[in-house]
Amino acid sequence: VQLQAFGGGLVQTGGSLTLSCTAYGPGSTAYGLGWFRQAPGKDREFVAQISWNTDIITYSDSVKLRFTISKDKSRDTVYLQMDNLELEDTAVYYCAARKAPNGYRLASNYNYWGQGTQVTVSS
Image (cartoon, rainbow, N blue to C red):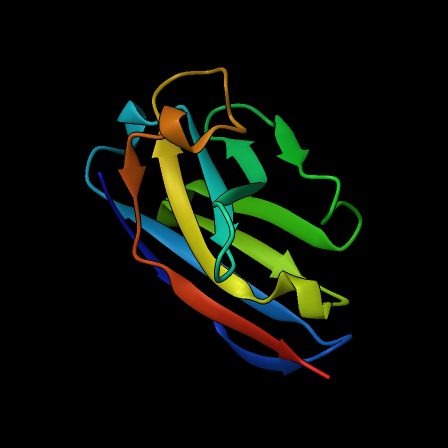
């Protein structure tokens, strides 16, 4: 599975961006797809995940009610709609796919990673 992420950019606080991540290859090998982010000098942190064949969705507390993850199975694509962006949301965002059904918050449980896309929120 190869993942390719798009949609990063520069936005002001309170603005919105939508990231997309398309999977190329045998998508059935992935149980779930997640978004992580990494700010300069910080560890990579879990943002959201969606299970490919079910409707299980999970968010980190820091983005809950502001971000929305969704999927389009016909396009093998996962989206991350980010609203009401805050300065603290500035980071490189990565999409990732995992084979295991559990442990969605841990980056180490993801088997495939896309290239990062930069999201910068300015005041």
